[in-house]
Image: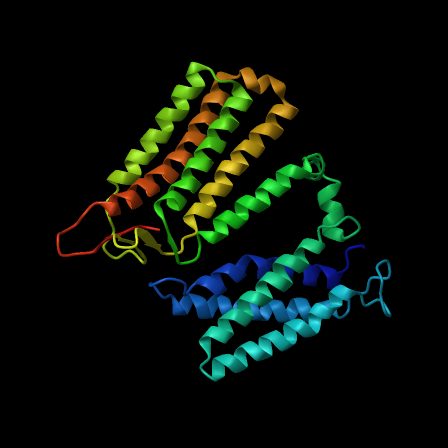
Length: 312
């Protein structure tokens, strides 16, 4: 499919909608509400979605199964219109929960899922991606790597919701990611003393800094430990997702770099930078977990639970 003014408008609106959507849809998440930010980005996101849906009416594709150039993906056009209508009707009725669910569902379905189809070969963005150097890198990546990434993303998403968890479950994630991080460093540069010491130093330094960080008394969320049930009550946070993706992307980037330039494996500066960065990400993970474990200490004889602010 060749670039045209209509496609340019559609693509620009869609990309901007993908970028502004998270701010608009999650600006009011947590105890600290940001209504002005939510409204500003919300109006912008709705406008961009309307532009993207309307411009798509004038885009035809005769290569895919179609009726007069309209393919199955064009079904999203009425979906966008009716979803926005239903969302604002719910808002007018004071049903904030329904309004939120419709908008979030629309973002995931119309922006993320449908946007993913535009990266397929034969689509304009897809051809740009797969015919470029990044495209060749992605195409050469083993399928199991994408499977691992999917599992890690799901694990990260599970941390974004308020939940209850036992001690083993709380410790499992940071231990697993620390092992994955250390394995990545060792598999890339070998299990030399320098690699192991550098990784452990960075990990311990980051963990200590997290533990020594001053508790913010105006933190948005709180983590709580119930000594009777031996369960943590944890707020949702996107920090674990960022740490998980950081550790994964470091290993992936190192693998690609060493494949393209094998000499980097013996470059001490490159090795030290990568190992220290991997250790820092793991240390932050460990420090956050140690702060959680500190909640299990008895706070008083009359209390059956302990509670402390936990920065997310």
